[in-house]
Every structure is written in structure tokens, then in C-alpha cells.
Length: 541
Image 1: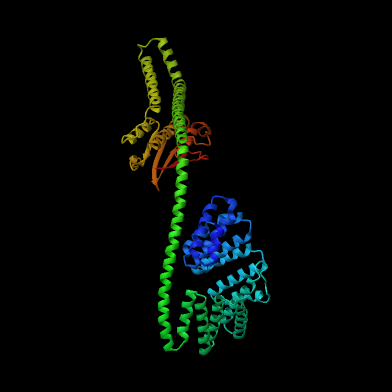
Image 2: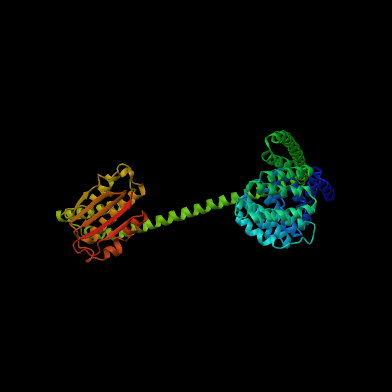
């Protein structure tokens, strides 16, 4: 298949060559053992596409070769691929990417001849960027030596003539190198004449046209424009023929320029039509090849799909059954776990609450009950003194029982919260203890979270309980302040103070500190106060 492609390519039948190169790469694509044939065929396809100006398709085609470059047996395939990609970006005026791929090709190249050729191509890109000095820096060292192509000796002179041509143009465009430029052009022409190749002579005469244009010699400029044009005609290079004809129009006199202009218009139109036909022809080939490939893949996929369909359905059913069993088991386990955990936590909470209430009842009521029972056993309740004592004892028992009930009762958090809070605090007021409250009616209680209301209630309750037990205070003050979304509570009494009663901090108010921390608050004790007890705490609202 590839031999047919080479035959058509060498005979100039590029459409047929493209067709067979494409067939070759389609046969080789799935098989990495045929990487050489695959990459080489793609490289030739890209060269043909570039000749006809189809650079987008050339890039798309060449990219397919890149994954196989490391699997080829000869480095030349990779070098050619990177070089063609460099050409593609050069033709589309993306000079930085062109340099990038030419430099990749340079790293891969092995022979001195191939490296010198790539350096010449890099220099040509620099010339398009008008970096003439950079181009000269690359070309001057190469031109000093006649580097031979040992594989194909006939290419040696072609390469040397091209290097001299590029170096001469770089000297010419850089300026102040008139003699060096002319010397390069003369030597390049001398070599090119020995090749007897009209296509190569186009560039040589074109360089002289540029030279005499710059140094203002109209006669020699016209002569070289004519020579370049007739070489392009003999070489049957339509593009070059039109380009050289444009130069001849500019170099010749008005009468001849008019004649040349008519030919230029006719040939330009003919070239446009020819390129459109070629482009359409290649588009048909590319479309058909893609269509064949897609149809083959579709048939393979259909066959594989039929073979796997039953197995897939079976696997889906198994996975579905397993998933259902797993999900149901997970839900059942989670439900039982949460149920047991909730029941355990509830029992623990009940036990702790009952134990705390039981201990409180035992601590606060046992002695009163005992004294009351002794009084009843003594009798003589008819006496006013014993009767009053009994009533006082029963009143104390009732009061303490009521307080314990309130401490463990449900706390309302609705609009009645502040009333309940004040009522709880008032329960600690006696004939000997005066309580002052400030700022309670300023706080917008409906904007405070329920859990924070409950925490505030319990904290104040705990502090008053400790006051009653330990501080021996006669005056208590509680002040509420709001600032920057923070509620600050200031508590102060005129009791014995913390320095005289360290047990207040160690035991009684430990719960207060823990509760404040749960609502992300901070608390400060005045530990050095000997004139009463002071504490302040703050939490966000």
C-alpha cells in the first residue's frame, strides 16, 4: 500500500499519493508494531497538505503521529514530524511555535548534515522575525564548512546553496554588509547552476533582484526579475510564477508592466480555482477516510456491545441486589444504633438528674424533716410555742422543696422568659438579702437563642445558690449590658469575698464556668477580692 503511495508521490500525483498514504496509516494505527509506517505515512500526508495550503488539516493530521514517535525504530521519523510542525507554524505566521518545534527536531537529530539543515531553518524563522543578526550568528559557522550528506550525497549542494542564500539575505536586510551579501549570492548561484534545477534557480535570481533593488540598479533588477520569472515558468511552479511576475511588473517599464499585469490576473484566477479544486478533492478524501474509519469502529462496537450486553445486564442485576441489601442493612444498623444510643443517653440523663435531686433532697431536707419528726413525737402540739415551731418547720420544708422543684423544672424561653428569670432571682431575696437588677428590660430577649437563655438562667441560678450558701451577703447586684452583639453580665455582692472562701471557686462555681464555655463565652472571677464577691461573663447573642 505504501509503495503505491511513494510511486504516485514521486510522479507528482499528490491526490493519489495522499489516498494511499491515508490507507496505510489507517491499517497501521491500532498496531504499535507498525509505528514506522504509521508516522512516515502521516508525515507525507502533511507535506502534501502543506503544499496545497491546508495547514489546519496538516496540524490535525500530524498531531496523531506524536504519541508514536518514541515507538519508531529510526530517529528520522520524529525529526521529520517536528520539522513539518515547525513548517506549519511558519506558514501560519506563528514564529515562536515554529522555533519551538524546530528546536525539538534539532535535539533529536543525529547527523551533522541534518543538524546544519535544521539550524538553517531556525535561521530562516529568525529572518521572518527580522532578527537578522541572530540568523547570521547561526549561519556563519555552518557556511565555513562544506557539510556533506553521507546518506544522499546529491543533497549536499542543495543544502549549501540554501544556507548561502539565507545568509546573503540576512546580510542584505541587516544592512552595512553589501560585499558579504553579494559574495553569498554569487556563490549560491554558482552551486545552483550545477544542479540544473529551474525550481532552485528561482530563489537565486530572486536574491539578486532584492540586492539590486536595495542598491538601486534598475537595469540589473529587471534582468534578475525576468530570469526568476522564466525559471518559475519552466519549473511549472504556479505560486512562484505569480510571485515573480509581480516583481517583474514592478521592475519593468509601464508598457510591459501592463502586459505582465494581464497575465498576472489570469494566472492568479487560475491558481485560485486550481487550489479550490485541490482543496475540495483532499477534503473529499479526508471525509471519506474518516467516514470509513467511523463505520469500521461502529461495526466493531456493535459486535462488542452485543457480546457484552447480557453480561452487563447480569452484572447490573447483581450490583443492584447487593446495593439494596447493603443500603437496607446500613439503615437498619444505623436505626438500631441511634435508638440504643438515644435510650442510653436518656437513661443516663435521668439517672444523673435523679441522683442530683436525691442528693439535694438529702442534703437540704433531711435535717429539717428529722427535727420536725422529733417535735411531733414530743407531743404537746396544743401549746402555741410548739405549734408555731411545727408550722415554721413545715414552711421551711415546703420552701426548700419548691426551690428544688424550680431548679429542675422546665425553663420557658418565650416572651415570659424575663418574668420567669426575675421570679427565680426574687426567690433568693429575704429580709436580710437585698437584690438589685439593672438592664434586664433593655435586652431584646426575643433575639437571643433559646439555648443561651437557658444557660443564662442556670448560671444566674447557680451563682445565687452559691451566694446563699457561702457568701453571707446582704446586698447583691446584677447588671446586664449589650455592646457589639455581646451580652455582658456583671454580678457583685458584699459577702465574705473569694480570698476568705476559696471553696466558692473550687466547687460551687465550676458548673458556671463550664456552662459559659459551651456557648462560646468568657468568664472572669475577681479572685483577690476580700470585700465581697465579683464575677463577670460575656457571650455572643
